Image (cartoon, rainbow, N blue to C red; front, side, top):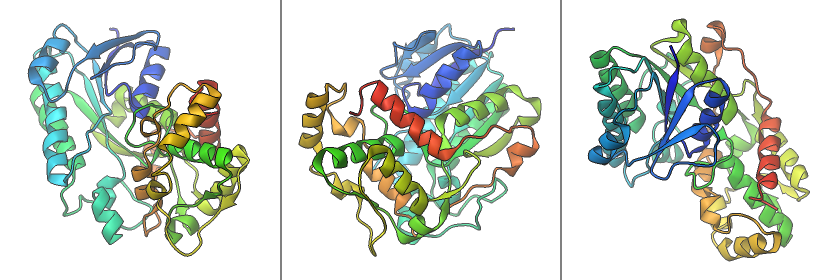
Length: 355
């Protein structure tokens, strides 16, 4: 039987890289988004709003996927609203597919906020379970839209009889335009501005993040784990952490990233210097750079998400991820973290998104 994939959120970092990998592995692949990609050869675009059930039902009529990958979310002002909106998005898409009874597996991408709590909670309080974080850790007694998304998957699985997997990456490194959580591209744009203006590439985050151990998740290795879990019987109905498999200190990596762009690296100097403030007035600067170098995207806000990078790099705590669970079950893919950044930078330059 043919594998038919539906990637929900196919324009994002995770969804875009996943769609490419699914197509390369022979999946018939649909990409659902409000404004779906049309340039990816082999991807069948579906335009729909996940909060508009009529739009969604019409768009998915006649689509019978065997594997559904939910890789999207919507940022709201409060966590209560995050729960309402993002829970509804998952519920709506699974309800729309229910009548077909074609779905064998649903994979949901969440993240380490499962262990840390919502953005504002860990940024403000700095509370954290024992690290490295492990899948066995219980849910926190905090509002968290990831839990709401999971519960919608569990309820639909019980109703429709499909298996599921939950995937918890750390910061995802990969290419996407218009993405809300995009550390790699944000740092590439910041470094490019530093290079053009002669400013130093200054560490924006905390002492704990500068000195502590950390890890990240390449979008390509996340895609590999999503497909592995969706097609491996032993991985059914499990949650998995997913990172590159190495660890690093930003005090080491920051200098390497600066060297790639040939800019001056400045480390932690006793206080946090938020990137959002650092880049607050750089919109016109980026437009000038885009014009000078004939870049594709002159809108800084469609490339850089400084607010999210600040939340990651500003944590007053060290964050590491345990990968033992999926390793023991046979998922052995590995990715060098410096190469994750270098590969992304080269791709951004090749596609004329940075100079």
